[in-house]
Image (cartoon, rainbow, N blue to C red; front, top):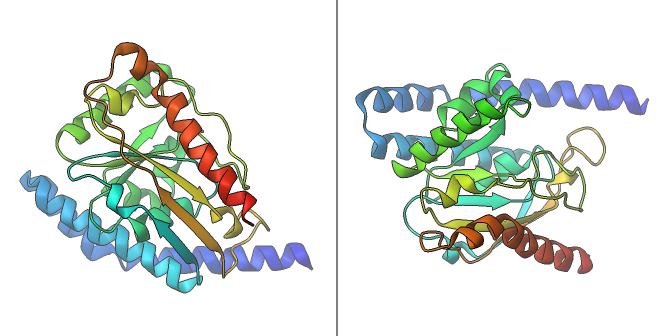
Length: 250
């Protein structure tokens, strides 16, 4: 019975997600028009409208309670948000919380191929990593740097995969070159609780409580080569320390 229930819940979620994303089609055409016209400012505005509409819709539908701290730590201009990665819900949670600037995601290549969702995540200026192809990954980094230099912001999950729980995996070495090369500020974010939405029971469930803690931004323009090389480790320690603190309070 449990397996049948999980399948039923996941089918319902898939249908709801499909129609929810279809309702974002007006943003798709506006984004495309501004992109074709070369108007980055208006394109970012429409991407922001799309991500916040989608994210807030999911928070409301599944009664996800957000505890957000540190919005004042987000600087003006493009940034790279660096976060631990607990579950599928991380992406809509970001959409619901970051309501002051456009965000795209550094995502695995397969996400861009999912029907409807793949079109949406490409629309919002995400870039895609091919894990087994280092040459393609370098090209992705260059693409991301180009977007950052034009004023677009990105979210990266340096663990490279979901932890599916309250723990945290190791950050991939060199994962923050995307930020250090163009000298873009890095904003560490500690997420906790998103795994309750799907991963905990293998199907979507309502009522999760999620902490979204935004740490002070780290400027990367003046970093020495050694400091740049150690940045991923430093950010990992910042995020992990807060995650452990949040888990102790439960």
